[in-house]
Amino acid sequence: MLFALAALSAAIAIAAGAFGAHGAEAKAAEYLKTGGLYQMVHAVAIIALGGQMRGPAWLMLVGAAIFAGTLYAMAFGGPRILGAVTPIGGTLMIVGWLWAGWTFTRG
Image (cartoon, rainbow, N blue to C red; front, side, top):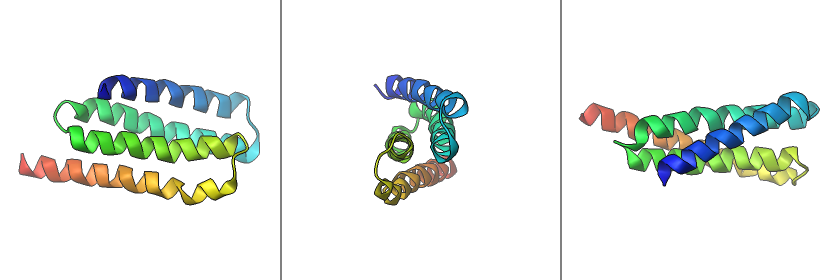
């Protein structure tokens, strides 16, 4: 399930980035490109880590969904207050990376 969700996440990231590059304007385009970049990087990381580090991978998946999802929502007219939620996703991604790094050191 984790890998299937990571693949879906990558597909959404491509669609968001493409729309940001070709169909959106100004701030909306910036939100879509930023969300797409972070979501794609983490989709690949999830696939790379998921087999050995399921905990960090799930944190990254949830974090990327919150981070990118709030940016996408704002790009499509959602309330700007969602920007206050975006850092929660970023924090989860950071914690996922720190957890993965800690796990690597325990080797």
